Image 1: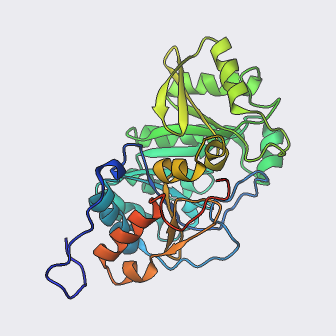
Image 2: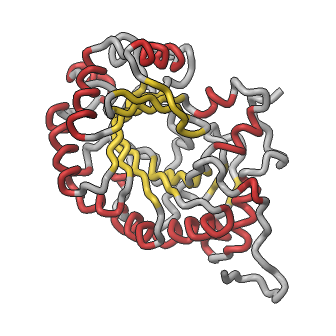
Length: 323
């Protein structure tokens, strides 16, 4: 590995073995803060109202290669905002694909039909479909997307790119998509028909309208005959007759329930990278580490140090939920 330091003795930092992704840690690229939907309950990770897309496709490829060598990370999640709003989304996904990244995209679907070829480079497509009720969907998203067009479009894309693993993402909404609802039954039917997975996440904050605790949701799954199994530190997996349902919380909600939220976050959360080259494991914007200069100069050694700092629970960063 090359770097730009003027020293023959300078080497890549030695990363402790326990940091080598015992959990399935991703690089989470917040590609843009822009979105063509206006979902009221969006938790807007790293979206502070500014829009500085300074990083390009080569930059994202460089970050991934460095993180892979330094921390053993081989997974990337493309998020936002809506990642398909990036004009250079093809170039970004192509370079990550050629770097052997396992790439997940989180999308609301609406812009994918305009550039379906991007799916050639995506391994997992997490599609936001909080409800199959057209009136509620329109109210939640402020969009003109038709549910039946969306479902047919997903099926068509999946037939074009059968390597894609499809997950239908839903924020758990009381009385609308819980296991006793028509919506849940419809999505379960789609999952069984097409081999898609379903993913349900608890709304961020107990004071949010329609809030349902994910534990209540999971008990209802068990009552329907689903069996639980391990998935990862942040999410649970439930199975029945070939159908798979993943459940979880927004990360801060989960960390707050542990004895040491800061350690838990640093040990298990993804590494977020903003469009202007800041990074952290904290999605609530407590402390961001500027990595832009090391990215711009292609200084792998320095970037590796910053990546390691971002996941080190002993840094000066202080979790707001730690005592």
